[in-house]
Image (tube, rainbow, N blue to C red; front, side, top):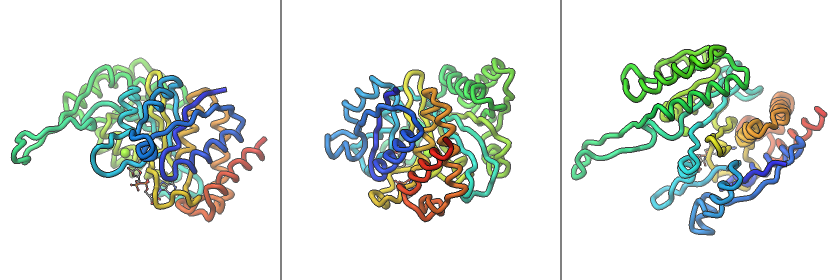
Length: 339
Ligand code: NAI
Ligand code: MG
């Protein structure tokens, strides 16, 4: 029996987390879900978007599945996602992108996994005005360390080895950013030497963007710094059908939080229209993480089977005619038919 903190979140969060827990249960994985609150709902009820009770539960269990959280526009509301990444040093953001049957996309052979460094780089937003009075000049500081670069590149190579992948691509801008991106590349090459069984290449980020759009099938595992990873991971999702069908994990040394990359979709919340695939794929990364690889594979295959042969039961956003419930039911049925 595994114990996992479950944060349903806002908007469509409760519907899609319900779908995901139903499917995991049907696959025979025994999970003791500990419900926890975060997001706008938590803020309205308890005055805090990340209540201390939720932090206590994550402190104790070190693993969580999180639905999307609504972030109200305006000040005074800290980003829960950023707070969680910081607090638990979730330094690796893992985002697989693979072609799905019957999901419209320009390619039919994408299968890549992107590792994004989650705690440093330009993305941390260390900015200031050079002249506070006029606000006509600003600067932003990118911060990169040997230790964090080594950790993220090692995570990518370890993953490649564990999952039987052949190649790791290091993505950087070391030709221009010789210190920050240069350090990342230097450390990346050093780490690569420890993995002679895995091919390694490096690409400059602008060339990478073009290559991903023209020949995405040449990529296997990709690792890069925070801001490049932010952009390229959404690009990767776009190659396979968008944010509605891509899962994500935030991993640290002793804590892991799995989440969908889309938002709380307030426009369709409570209408049984939400597509649970993205959160489900995040949950499959979670099952892999806790050693339930066989169940993860079975659910993955069941989803592909439903997409390929029961497209009508899928949700409208991917061209189906069904609902959250009909999709969930179809996946459960596909799991039972396998047995
Ligand atoms: P969104 O991703 O919630 O919605 C964009 C569009 O995609 C909407 O038309 C929505 O209906 C559709 N959509 C999204 N997920 C879907 C799903 N699973 N099934 C079917 N359709 C889906 O982005 P938006 O509207 O910009 O943000 C809404 C709220 O979510 C905001 O408060 C934002 O801050 C928050 N947000 C939270 C994230 C997180 O917690 N990880 C990530 C992105 C946004
Ligand atoms: Mg992003």
